[in-house]
Length: 493
Image (cartoon, rainbow, N blue to C red; front, side, top):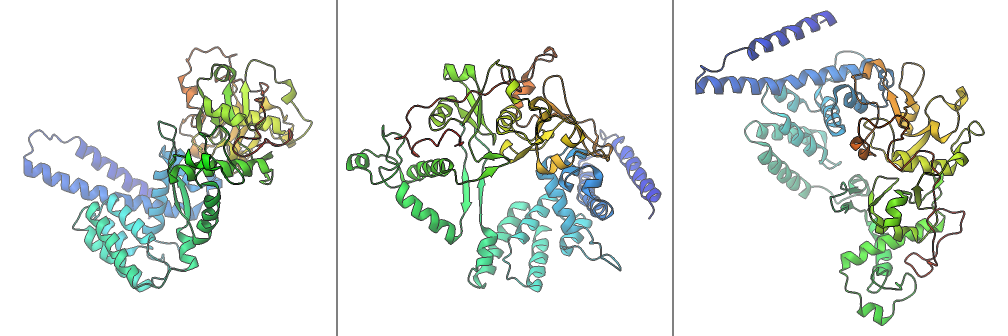
């Protein structure tokens, strides 16, 4: 079918929907209403098959770069104003359920042919699809192709007759029974399952970790915990905590923490020691360090919060405690001038002082919708690249992750500019321009609270002025604090 034929068919489909939407439902009986609902439900299950085919075909005809994006996930997220997780879901389903393009000859069957056929007939819904997709991904690597295909067929047959909850239970049982006949776990299988995940920060500021560690990884932490999570070690309630050597009997007797709490405190101590060692190298031009932004008012009042370069919100008391161990944890803003940070065209790359200020000002990638934190970003020349005459001036720089930094070009891609409030605006290419926001509020949601009538000459963020000179928190003698003494003055901890 040609493009005009497809558009005509879609126009007929839209016209048919408008006719259905215009129908009067007041005089319908219960059987009529149920019959109509059944048909609508079946049609809603079938319609995604066309979207999957179109998306799969689009991926063979062009690239994300030609669309003005870094990935297909970004294309869908920007053009259709959906979440990253929804974009991932649609791409995964298109990859598994749409016909595959062959190098030569006719198209190949979908990766999950039975699931695709059931969806095309409207027999399973989106929830069934997700259960089947995730269950197939859990199949061990040693399962042969015939068993894999039969596993899919069995799940589809079950899905036709039950709901997602029952399908999930059945799939978990089948996976359990299947694994009983499998070989012993191998290094490949263990490597496939490894990972560490964190939850979003909760209302109380806490973050939950979930880990699946390989035997090697746990052997490493087992030895570390044996030392640093022992009773009496790294106790934050101890006026002079023991972070090396052997704790005294009094320190052991006065340690009332649980094992889980001791292991938590050991993680802090070991991480702090690693940061202070100076052996972690550099991250985007800065020594690996904890960088926190706050305001002078919050610091002096001992109330309020600080925000790390990774986006973690910390109570000001924790910020002050961290600052007691090194001189380069804090970027504190006030109304001082920032002329020392203006390097203009003296060099192409941002200085460490500029990077600290950008991390504190932007909080992360300035591209709208990007969730990459400041630690994973580069300094981006907003107005013009250095090679094109741009200045390496903190007021003309902004944070951007690597893919989005490279997406800015003069060949129909994204472009950037600095507005009157000191915020980086991103202008999309025509294929992705849907009138969306030009500013990323993900890392600085407090900017949404500012009054609309703020004067143009007042920078965003209140006291946190782009280009202001950072003040380093002073330190007393922290030699007895957990993690040991602070590093030399020219090292960041």
